Image 1 (cartoon, rainbow, N blue to C red):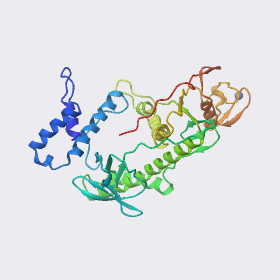
Image 2: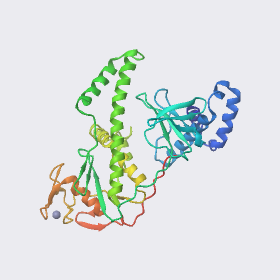
Image 3: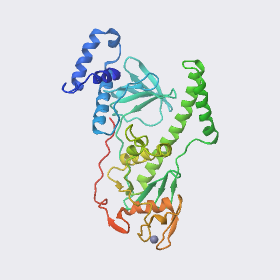
Image 4: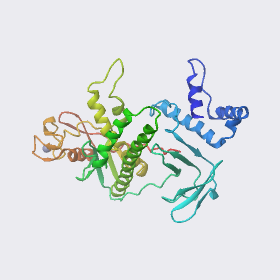
Length: 369
Ligand SMILES: [Zn+2]
């Protein structure tokens, strides 16, 4: 259904009028189900929700927040969504297992990893690239309450250290452990040598996918724990207003204007992606709505958090900050985090100005349906 939508969209030409919306596409789907029995054998809920997902993906594309929806591939983008879930459709079997009723498939067992609310209305089933099936029940969680002390924290994103707090703490995202770090490149070399479509290739591919999935799991777990911890301990959380997407997208540039230092930037972008920064900020905004503030990033690394003096030479090295005016010295990332906590934006050398970031109300992050 998704790919049919992609194909339909590809036929659009300038001056042709709007593409059909969700209701019109559902009507077309009904017609198609009458004409093609194999299509009618599938669940109409699953098919309609794929159309709906596609509509949302296009809306995000027009907003400029996501890339144009592309073809979905077997083995890569497997999954579906079920809506109109009734209270009896989920039942607990014992401590570790439960069952969910899936239309056209019947009762399917799943591991009870966390409580499912009684009033859940929809869920999504996915198969990840490591071959694991997941079921996720959609629910909007209660925000995490802050301590109510008015305490403010600043967080600086780093590459070496994933995040530095203005309190002096360092947060590091777990990556691959020693043996894993050498195993992945070896598997990738093996993959490059394996013949396309061969059994060996499939096997090596699955091994690499499992390894990558393990890393991604650890990163996600870290973002969850760190964001909950921060939301509980601080009332206001200030981060740099970095547009990660622009940063990660700009490396290669375009054919007319190729980017400079492409290799280095791509490496840095990979590190930023791996550092889980985007995921941390996103989850913070979900868990502490209205309490996350974005501060302009200008000069946060060159400004002294003790006296306010701005000088590029104060940044002695990647790791060390030593003020050229007052002699204050500390870890460079912590210094930046303190500047972020203060909500300062410095417009030009030495000119210290309050930004108004204090008054700006951050937008509530919209939770995915
Ligand atoms: Zn100073």
